[in-house]
Length: 249
Image 1 (cartoon, rainbow, N blue to C red):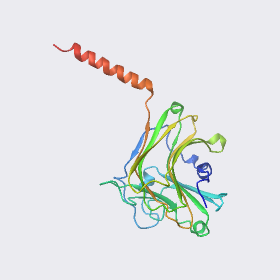
Image 2: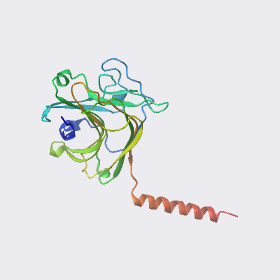
Image 3: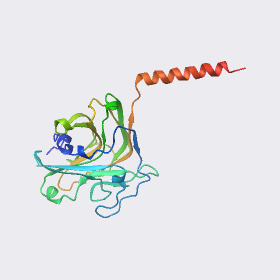
Image 4: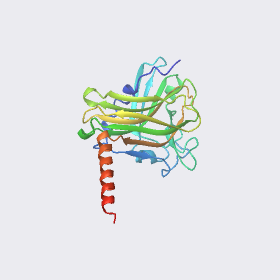
């Protein structure tokens, strides 16, 4: 049984768009160090949801046909479902975020259905954001993902005028990452129009309670300066240099 052919996030996140909370895009960065760690109880605390993280799940048959979805919900900080702070070891001195399946969905896991669990941030695209370039970057390592479970990191836009279908996406398969920290980047150009929804985050697809955890740290979304910005900066530095030379005795 192979999970990689389950598409996707279009089905998994199509209903999430109404939970937008930002009027336009701004950089994001989180190392999870200041967030409360998860407790060994379902639900635990709201450290991740207070930072804007959401979760959504889609359930498929073993053959990959969609069955139902649920969410979006504020991201739990729980060892039982979706996400937790401090899970699975960390970079030296740091906490991190573990992302894994919704093991609270016992009916799906117990019957061999596939649970695609997504943990993500969400923004609304403004007119001034159209055409801008961004980089979604993070550190990651394997914790206990067991094949045939798969994991993804993604950045994408959804179009509410088209039933929240995916209008643009960049993703990377995280299923085979090693058990040592590495840095990963996803470049993304916002071709979506104003009013569309930008999402960036992580997902896993698992069944039968198989291990599915990848841990993430130093998560960021940053703009890529346009070449004209570099030119202006260089020109400004040159002017400063000329001014400094003229002021010399």
